[in-house]
Length: 291
Image (cartoon, rainbow, N blue to C red; front, side, top):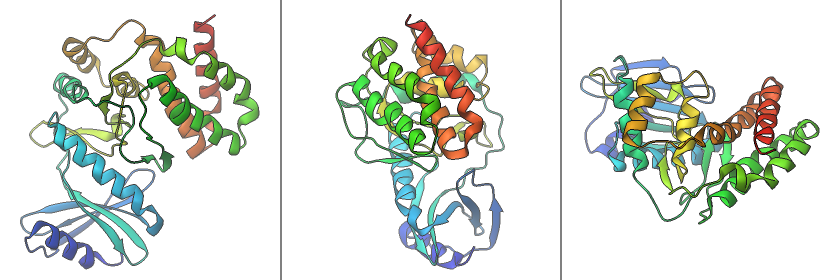
């Protein structure tokens, strides 16, 4: 890290409290970013780092964290500041000690509480990213139209530009034509984490569920629940508690495949052809369900 003192000075300016670095430790920042913990004798901050052109990504993430905190449903690290130093952009936030054991039932109830925070329209007031892929959040009244244009359609178009169109084109066109029937309901626009897999949830030292690394927008709550199932699931206690707080309809079993297809296509676009067979298999299952 080239210039931690500039970030420390920015933190001090925003918080109104002196902050002099006593400890600096590189930590995991996920697949996209680098990260470091900066600490003095009293406080610690988690700082994400990336290239200068990623500043808007960090600004959107900061606003997403703030939106989740405002909902007051579960613990979320407090964003502090974003900026540029040298050849790096950064996002500084509260550092939470994630050494506790996650209580799945409490996490499920907290997620249902988050989803009770609703809006008039789907989307959000700004675009953000899913991983490092642009995520367009243009507001819309119609959920099917939003999903067709800004989620499934966007990823299919990107896959075509990345050279995967031949394998996905026919199935993608068929899916787009039957999307109304596949979604088949009119959800309320719920506040979503947007990228809720197991790597983006933890527990504080006291055992309180903590969510982070969001891709916030307002959408069908089932998209968040579906993603928790994509990479192994969160455990039976989590799902039982969520369903007790806000039951899921039987049709969710099919919709979750559609909603997770967005993330699998995004992984295909980010990380390559290893996800192509999975995406094609999901599309075939969805098309079979409507015939």
